[in-house]
Amino acid sequence: MVRRNDERRAALVDAAIEVLAKEGARGLTFRAVDVEARVPTGTASNYFTSRDDLLTQAGARVYERLQPGEEIIARHRASTPDRETYTVLMRELVDRVSAFRTGYLALLELRLEATRRPELRTVLTERVRADVAANVSYHEQSGLPGDATAVRLLYLAFNWLIVEQLTLPDVFPPAERDRLVEAAVERIVGA
Image (cartoon, rainbow, N blue to C red; front, side):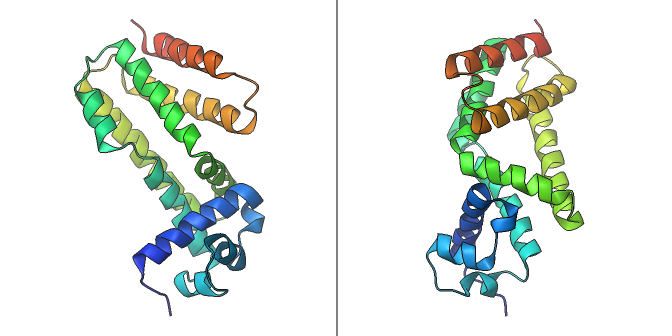
């Protein structure tokens, strides 16, 4: 029987994200999630039908937690739609994702698992497509410079920059990272 306490389920999924980041996909077990969540042994298995179910829900949850807050969206909608605003937006994106280090590391683990798990790949593919489409739509509605291709190229460039920041942080110190964000916007978006 699968339990329906939504708060407990969210806490268990968040614990799964932490386990994925610390131990990798092979370390993700119901018992490890129970320990991380500080709940009695057997709790996670009461909430998830399988390990695949837990992986899939962890993937969806990472993306939920990476979404910008309403205040950030409102501030950017009120800004002048120019390249400087675009650069600020991209810096905030890189900072927000980098601040959720365990979430992004868990997401990398999930992406590797998705190469072997079709259901997980489907969930992640749908989520990434939806996020890219939402970013393109926001971009087009905001009047920011550049086109849909620029949005996609920045998505790809900044994903790898974030990987570098979270896995090998000494490669690009913060000041250089900021210059790279600015250069990417300038070169990809254009004048």
